[in-house]
Length: 259
View 1 (tube, rainbow, N blue to C red):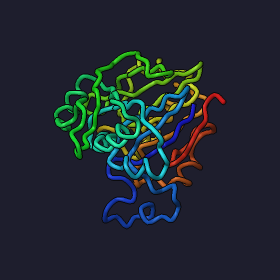
View 2 (cartoon, rainbow, N blue to C red):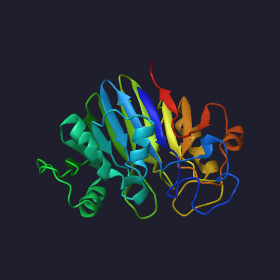
View 3 (tube, helix red, strand yellow):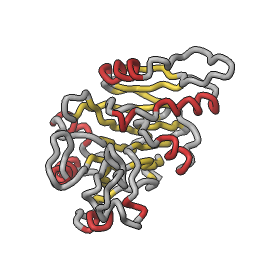
View 4 (cartoon, rainbow, N blue to C red):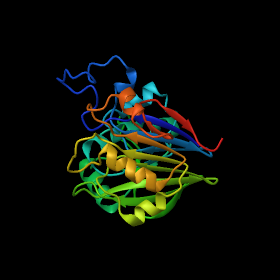
């Protein structure tokens, strides 16, 4: 199982427009963060989790070869506004691509992208050919078993995902304030856990670094990664404060699980 962090930043990205803070002005490439998104490959199946505002640049930079399915965590702009660029993969692959999300998120996607359908394109017209699928439990995407797990992220219906393949498991929750006990238990013992870690200061809809570390201790993954980071956090300085086996993710970071 191969995982690529396409983006690890919060909704405004880093550097932040008009900001002169030391992280936004940093020369460390790990402090340049596109909006959060993850790409996972296993058993010949290629899954994209969230289509961020930066998806086109992410796909070009990190050479995303194909997209067999898209999982959407929730309908905030930074997680869905790159969906239109999936149309290029319709052309490359010659197929309709499924998009999995909760019922509320699917309703938002259909409203925002009302022109998306599964019809054959008109000559010279390129629109995404996507099939929206409502899923809130366990389902399969090619070789991968996916479990959608609810988390609390303000008033927006939001899910994280557990992905399993041949006995190896990954958890991904880029946005949450709190995690229901039942959801936490489903993530316990995964090989890799990726969790929201916005900043040290409290935020109304995102978890702090300290609270994230408490959750990660309970989850007990072999390796844990913090994502969806804001410009309060310098990569190297934050990494120095983390316990063993917990890491700050960065754009382009690639992990191999199970090989």
